[in-house]
Length: 450
Image (cartoon, rainbow, N blue to C red):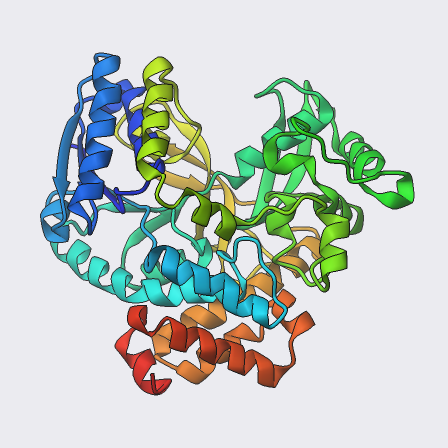
């Protein structure tokens, strides 16, 4: 029997979205879904919400709710990771401490000081999880949704797990391209490859026509001042991130290809756009701040879950997330073409073999089959390499249990290095470690003298 475990199942909407996707797939109607979370109350809330959606559409749903990880994993065939160690308290320091040093990130979940800290405080949880998986369900496929995607996937694989990382940034960005070009949803055909949150749209076409020049012309006209663009923002204008795409327009103009993350996120991973408040305002006139949004919804979780249930009860359709599509294809459903984050076993020729890359993959009963891309354009690969350097350094530092090497990884972040001198980077890293000592592995607390 297919036994799907969602760990971190107490989240507000994401676990519920995945279960709703399952309800749309005949191949998964007999599957058992295990909702695992440290909070029984939160996992039970997800279970009630999911059952309400299933009942509204007369779909069978087998649910198990537990706080016992070993109970959850017994007999598991697939494991979806959706948890975040430290919650809002840790995330707040991820962003607020670097800002005191001039490193202003709007999400801080992929690279940078915040991305490193997310990975490090997740490492002990991954180690505990891996021990149980290898004992209780060693053949289970781990589908990771947690950030920082690349670092997490590399470490989970190091621990011996079969892991594939999933992210919606590529298809979401494809929809932005369709909106920019005035195409109906689903009409765009594309190939993207690179690293998570920095994959490059290598081909962009519709009805057999190459649209890369058209996309460049639209971005120039709308967002680049040298071509008369004004970086406009009006309510309803390209709803995704408010239609502010000057950052991606500048990157396409420079490197030749469109990126797979919003301009807000993309600006965090490079040294060009966030060196001063004036530069940020020029490139992103309407500020989007994930910490502020998270603080605003704190205390409104039940209302948000209720709103999601109401929407899904009124209309049940697949969200477009890859997780349940992958599982359905593996158990005999239609083959799925998805984007995956995997170790670079030859998929991209000019990125390192120990990197985690994002490429398309065919999924069927025989498994997950990533696509061989070949070489990325030199500039695109070069920008990816700046992120890979940090990712692999941080993972290696944790594997080696080396606090000094971990602090060195902070200095490899392109944005941080463009703003902060090395002594201050060391102080920034030390301050973050001290603030988050509660969640850190014991070896790191000892070496950092926390």
